[in-house]
Every structure is written in structure tokens, then in C-alpha cells.
Image 1 (cartoon, rainbow, N blue to C red):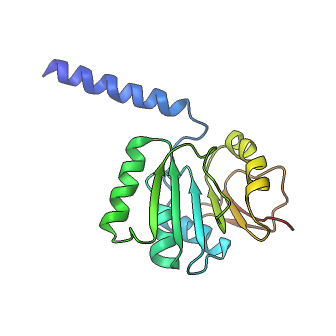
Image 2 (spheres, rainbow, N blue to C red):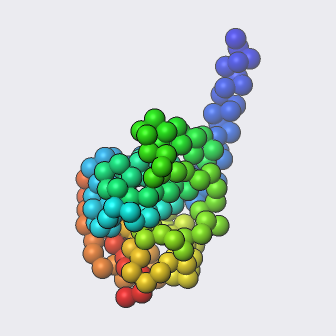
Length: 172
């Protein structure tokens, strides 16, 4: 029993260490803020919403279930990607929502109408060139908490707790 406890502790510490090496730590977004993000983005039925660093997929699920979007989450953490995939399946949304276990910096954004970011300032900075080159004119980006310094927001609102939500429109 002692060895099992030590092994579980080592795995837990390893996961914590690994997550600290990523560009953004997982911080679950409350339901009110999820809806504010998707409302600010102006999600319409049939649009494609991509959540980079989607965590457990809560924004992906809400975009598909409540807004009628096609939603894709990209998550590098295998545990959270599996959790998100499970949640989508249990919600009966597999026809409109999916989670990709992968690197958000390599994911093709050319089909996205809307991109959601709740990352770090460092990650946002690394994504600015990708967003500018891959998104079509008129595509929207909503960033929770951290701005995209290379772009001018078209609107700023607050989350449930008052942190900023930045809306950007590509190509003007």
C-alpha cells in the first residue's frame, strides 16, 4: 500500500511539473464567463469555433449545445483532452463538437470563424502571427484576461469576476 501511495504521489508531481512547463496553466472557466465569451464572439449556428488550450472542453460543449456551432477544442494535456472527449460523447454532441489532442501552435485555423483563447500573455504573443496569417477577414478572436498586443480590440467586456474579455475582428 505504501508503494502505491508513493507511485501515485510521483505521478501527481510529474503531472504538476509537466503542466508548469506549458505556456498556459489550466484554470477552469465558470459557466457565466463561458456564455459571456461566446456571446461577445457573436457565435451563430453552423459557425466553427476553435478553443485553443481547451482544457476539459467546457467552452466547446457550450458552443455546440447552446449556440449551435461546430466546435473544436485543441488540448495538449492528454488527460484533459480525454476528459473533454468523454464530456462531448456523454452530452450527445459528437456530431458537432470534438477535441483534438495536440499542439495549438500547429493546429490549422483556416476554417475557424471564431477562436477562443484563455492562455497566458506569452502564448498569446506566440499566436499573433498564426492568427494574422491563417484567419480569414471577418473571423473573430476572443481572448480572456490577456490581450493580443499586436491587434486592437473592437470591444472589451468583463468576465463574471471582472477580468477583461477582448474581442478582435480579423482584417479590419
